[in-house]
Image (cartoon, rainbow, N blue to C red):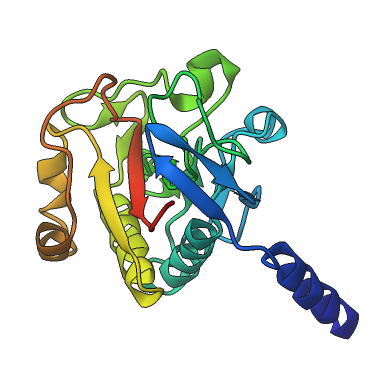
Length: 222
């Protein structure tokens, strides 16, 4: 255990020897020294090994820290919930098809948390047959097959991301989630915090954003 701790410390120091630098905007930018997100943690996992091997899970080093800190916080505040992240961007940023943004390391797509018929927090299936989750469609009541949107987990995660961003001296720019489903977020115990601190999309974007929610972080870029 002692040697593992030393190795882990050295690895972390090496990984952040050069902090990331972002340029431009999420829709017209690039990234230097992007950091690859972990494939999984105690309460989260990535959407696809294929996507990871294709280099589609890199972010700015600040966003990396916020990402990890938020999940660590959720282990305490919502210990029975599990989460899944999706696409982020390339190591050097730039055009990231089919997305219109995700170009400077400051954007992350998160797969919408769900519960099963027993009310248990589970991962929404993501595989090549449903375009790694992006082809899933929830109905107006938040149901898809045997799954139902877990608004408590979703709200808790957004709050955790915002609080951890603030601790590091940064902010969330916006959260894109289907406007027709947003009212359910504000009915949770996190509703008042969301109303006071989070800027949500007001209009439906070019894709619906029901099976995933898009988060942009506000970090200064060159």
